[in-house]
Length: 374
Ligand code: XMP
Image 1 (cartoon, protein in one colour):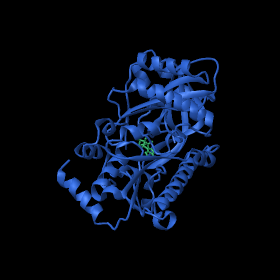
Image 2 (spheres, helix red, strand yellow):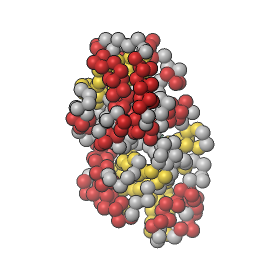
Image 3 (spheres, protein in one colour):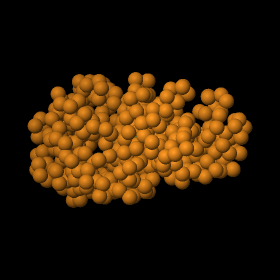
Image 4 (cartoon, protein in one colour):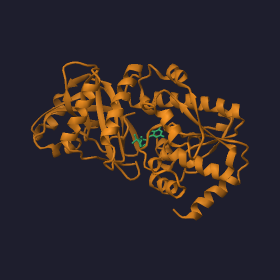
């Protein structure tokens, strides 16, 4: 990244009439880079906070504060009760996202008022608003681009120094700014966090299941050069589908089922919210698993195809492992992970939590799936 690009961004920020700017840090590369740029431009007039929504991964608030302590002083705001009150019990993906966004910005506007901040710094990048405006999903941090007037609604103006950049460019910018490599390469984590990975009805139990599984999946798949890897969980509630089973009958002894939950996908330029298919059985050749979506994804209502790795007779939840490779997060390929490695992860998830009935691997690229489930 040319120094000139950084200087231009900083100059642009300096030209704004900023009294105090509040940065909501998530610990990811986007929000951190945005905050560091603004700090360079306006110094101590930047205040950085981390909002603990209750949808974070294990020990995440403390971890983020520690890992950034050399470059930013971050105050953790505990808003867990507030978010639980607003979101627990919701099932629909968009409803969760919209409610999350409203709660998030209401909390931020209160903090901004307390600090006397008139601007909010966000790490919004180009795909965030392109997809939200395209109707694919309500990205939690996209406001102005969809016509929300933040000044009258929340009392602050938005400062989004990265909004024309793509992820790979932001990483380049972050490296040039001297941001620690662990943060530069940190995999993305969506703002609504585990609330959209506890798929379907949001409950504290499901959140706990997905949090524990996430810890295992993230640790096991770290260092493989993947773009994003995580766990999601939902009820293990399936019905056999004769039609879908017929579609995969050419692949050997496989059967297809439909989960009761729905998940998001992309069809053409718009968002779809459709079925998640579970495939069970022995594919004979493991490589065939990665072709399953070609047979099933053509069915109009199918957004995700998940292959069951391992199960047991009891437990309420299904855990799905998701691992993708992508340059820009607008499209993504499924990571071709060896079967043995996935089996070991599945086993650890099952041993670690007896509420989990089965574990699978999501074999759907984007499109037709999205990377997340909601
Ligand atoms: P999808 O699921 O749309 O995700 O294929 C593309 C990328 O965006 C991340 N993502 C989000 N990031 N707030 C964020 O900051 C959000 O609301 C949000 N939703 C999805 C997702 O993790 C992936 O990297």
